[in-house]
Amino acid sequence: MQYVSTRAAASAASSSPQHFSDILLGGLAPDGGLYLPADYPQVSGAELDAWRKLSYADLAYEVLKKFATDIADADLRALTAKTYTKEVYRNARAGEKASQITPLRVLEEGRGGKLVLQALSNGPTLAFKDMAMQLLGNLFEHALAQSGGQLNIFGATSGDTGSAAEYAMRGKRGIRVFMLSPHKKMSAFQTAQMFSLQDENIHNIAVDGVFDDCQDMVKAVSNDLPFKAAQKIGTVNSINWARVVAQVVYYFRGYLAATTANEQKVSFTVPSGNFGNICAGHIARMMGLPIDKLVAATNENDVLDEFFRTGVYRVRKPAETYHTSSPSMDISKASNFERFIYDLVGRDGERTRALFRKVDTHGGFDLSGQPGSDGDEFKRVAKYGFKSGKSTHKDRLDTIRDVADDYGIVIDTHTADGIKVAREHMAPGVTMIVLETALAAKFNETILDALGENAARPPGFENIEALPQKFVVMSTDVAKMQAYIAANTGL
Ligand SMILES: *Cc1c(COP(=O)(O)O)cnc(C)c1O
Image (tube, rainbow, N blue to C red; front, side, top):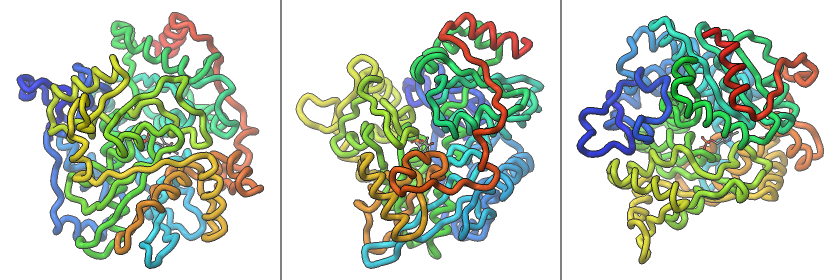
């Protein structure tokens, strides 16, 4: 299996391919594009039948084997077995089996269709990012053990990504994490989750500023190529290919758990921000998984909903980005979207490059086919099954209340966006699976508003805010940040 950049020139296509391990520790391709497989591996009906019986870990092995062809089979099996255990995904609730890793719960079953939740948030940080990040931690450790190298992960977070990365990398040999977050801007729960980690290899840096300041610092340090090379700096952001591919697995699991035969179709609704989660669904569908619709649910930050309704992709300015009660979907542009656009425009790297250059120069592009637009490929979107919808703060509150009243389940704000939008796309005879991307305890402020009572916390999280915290506060001075990193890597 070889990987190509979404911006590769036709003439370079044969010289640039990379293997899975080559792109594991990297981010963007050198030409600024994102990596994708040169061809999507296909899954046969016989394989799907055989996979119905597998544990999550064994299914992950079968799916990943098709993408990570340069990792020894026995190693890959050991890595997936170590990652997807009921001990790691232990935050299953009453009525869920932790051993299923991503258990399904049927919410309703009627003439309008069947509505099902797939729990992706039972991992250590109570959000779906654990699903991929836990594997990434083990893949990194494996790769570094082979090369004898060291990796210093440097990133910025407003909440979920940073904690998922820290819980995945804590205690890992050869790996250190330097995670920036805006000082006093995360929720008390999220702050406690990250800052209570006492592991020596985890460095929490609270920056005096907002999230954009943190991101600017990461960019400044990443653009200093000599520093980056000398300090062995890497990232784990959402464009990382291994994260995307790890997420493909739970679409297979969800489909297989919701059906009894491969003739049956399932749709997925995905609470979306950077398009990483739903991009994995697109890949599963391209592999031949019988997915009917892939529905992107956004909050008030509706860049993706706008595209899937109109064919116009228009990124927002930071000042136009709303701070909402589903904050992990508060994005101004969708960093993984280029992967889908590459497929949509017929895997034409030069055209993809031109479109995303226009994003930089003109703030977006238009594939609606209207006079003056940049193309008419939007008419092909239906072929890929994409649909979308949008949800607001009021919708979230209403949906959290409805679901609690009707089914006795407390869902988080992101999942509420998903259910609100899923209901607009139900079809008789097609099971609709909504991906549950976080547990309610993580976003308790809104649960309290909606229900007048606190969300239940899984065992072990009861007094997390009272634990001792380890972090340093720093200004937005890049030179001081670099000195801090260098002092702590020992390189
Ligand atoms: C990150 C996140 C999302 C958005 O996922 P993308 O891959 O960025 O589309 C949705 N919900 C929660 C809880 C998240 O943490």
